[in-house]
Length: 141
Image (tube, rainbow, N blue to C red; front, side, top):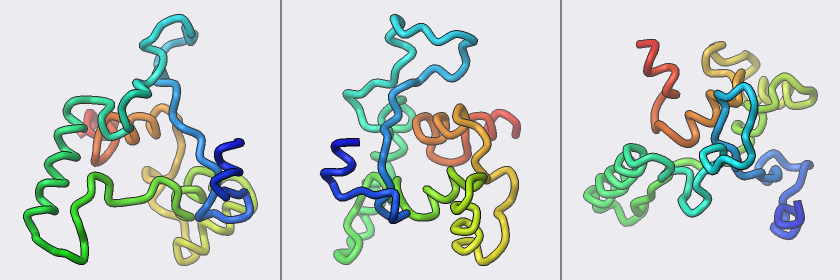
């Protein structure tokens, strides 16, 4: 929280909401083993490089954007910010006043149920393992 406060992040602004990094990586075990390195994410790498496949996808995206030659939109590995008002409201949608903020941002209605936050494990998979739909969504297809 010290770093969040020092960076000007605040609970009063959804676009500058405090950020807590993903540290744990084990959302499958019945009991979390804090002595097992596999319980934690690789903090030496950004979230986009937690798997080799994901890293290749982001490098490919960067290269493709660079090939467009658009000086106004330079290539980037990540096209969205991890702490937008919609992201914050989406994670906290079940808690007032975030429900109202979410509905305001969505034009007054909820999103499709399968796109709403409902699982920390699914959010971890989406953030760390795949670029598109979560790994669970891919397996169900």
